[in-house]
Length: 169
Ligand SMILES: [Zn+2]
Image (cartoon, rainbow, N blue to C red):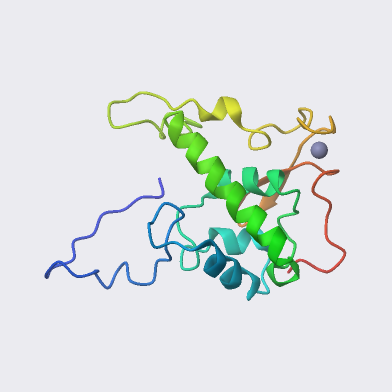
């Protein structure tokens, strides 16, 4: 659904089509401190920043929601209002979620997301907020809400992840 294939003629260098993509948290050259500085320099809402593959790559809609819940942050919080500690906790949470998801074969939210041999990942059973609208928050019991976000959905706990007072846009 979100994939594509392109051919880049030439040698073994980094193809121009990929050069703008940021390092992902599994890259040996990824540095947490540098990623913290990068995201804290942005004025956009923090989830929009997490999804921006030019800054840090590999974090999609589901893992962003899970990381934000773990870090107790609202998706619309302007990234430049996060403390360095909050940004560190958020990026660490995103990394942890991805490690856990990989360990369980990924997240097969529907039949499009299966492994190359057709088997499902099991991480959807471990999701704390994504797809859990109306179900109790695993931390405080308040029902999880679903909100429209960039033509998709955001799931959050209204108590653990309060809306910021500043306008998020
Ligand atoms: Zn909660």
